[in-house]
Image (cartoon, rainbow, N blue to C red; front, side, top):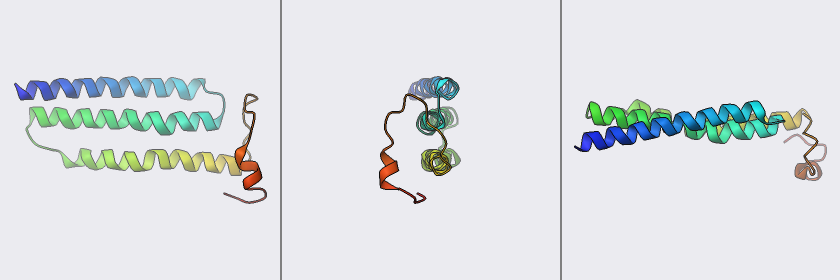
Length: 118
């Protein structure tokens, strides 16, 4: 009985992870500039991948009856490196003066980091 509940939760997490990843892909395609795309890739892609890995972890916990630590390490690795890599890509884009969209009204970092690399 408990195994069926765990497997049902695993299926829910896997479906949610796949949906979030699909929404992330649509966001990366539809958003206008590199900063918006980096935000979509950094936040929601990380959440989608974590949900997929956690659903897989629960599935193997329910069917095989043991905890796979490789999946836990994968979740921790993605949790750390996903947002960090998107932040560094956006920081490099800002240093290279990649243009914004026309909808961007204010650059809060321009006055603070005048003639400095961040």
